[in-house]
Length: 91
Image 1 (spheres, rainbow, N blue to C red):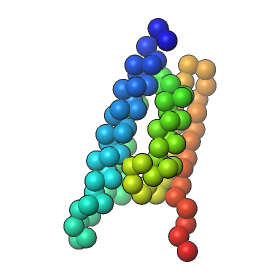
Image 2 (image 1 turned 180 degrees about the vertical axis):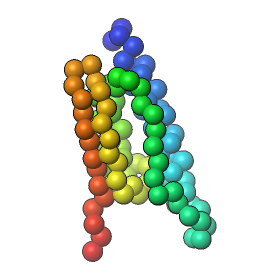
Image 3 (image 1 turned 120 degrees about the vertical axis):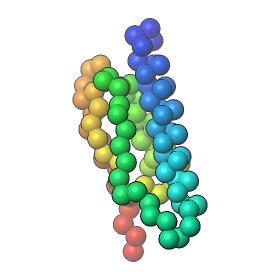
Image 4 (image 1 turned 90 degrees about the vertical axis):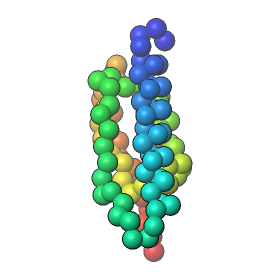
């Protein structure tokens, strides 16, 4: 791409995948272990929309284990993107 966005996007995707994988590993913790209620990450000032979409698709598909809610807003070169993914309610 030449504008540095691909490397920022790739770094963001790699960082988020590692962080979500670490959270998913908590599912293997003993039953009495407390899972964190929330988690956050500092994003680059400008994000690549395609990379963000890919990471959100992975979250929605369960690639990082069970996630209750993912929400935020990021700036891309052309727009701001607000997103929110909520887990389906169990019956």
